[in-house]
Image (cartoon, rainbow, N blue to C red; front, side):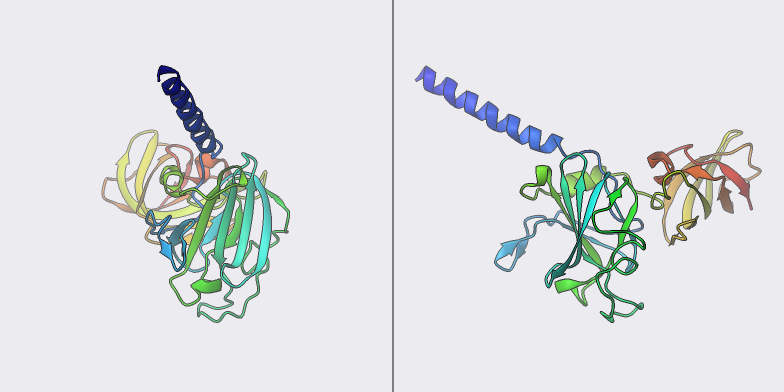
Length: 269
């Protein structure tokens, strides 16, 4: 009996170790959508005769969709259910699926666009291209069997390219980006409006409401993000509404996600 117990304990340890290894191959992710989204832990929910294999991230049509980690992309354009779809094969070995990308040419639900770069996928992106973490890869939409439903990204996580696991815990820990990463080696600048939360001789903290970025030309509204900038003794008061322009910054994860003091103020109006 004691020997059987030891065997069962050993088998249980192996199972736990395998589960731990599966989890460990999924790295710290960047959030796949830039801008405001809503989502729930809907992995495994009934979907007809099957179950939901990802999380649905509801957002604004054509919101930027980015690579959650460095890897290689593959376009998938022939699925009636998935619509315009993209695979990201991460360097960690994890595969990600981006489903229901945009297929509209106007603000209406016209379904006149094809699953091509500039409509579903980022302009200039090529099937099989290597991408950096945070790089723009597509645009949020409602193609496939999501047609006419609220635009959303169905996002899946497949450790080691195997069975899907719930993206929810990884999304909750993911860094939320202000903008997609600029082209390698290129800087980016921001124009932000918001309300002063705090000001010291060396930094400025705002609750940011709106944002415009260059060279991506991304614009966002209703951000409600608190960001602390490096700033030389700005002449402002708490509660004051201001517009801030930032100095050109390299596209590091810290900068594009607006981490404290990662961006430097150029001027304040």
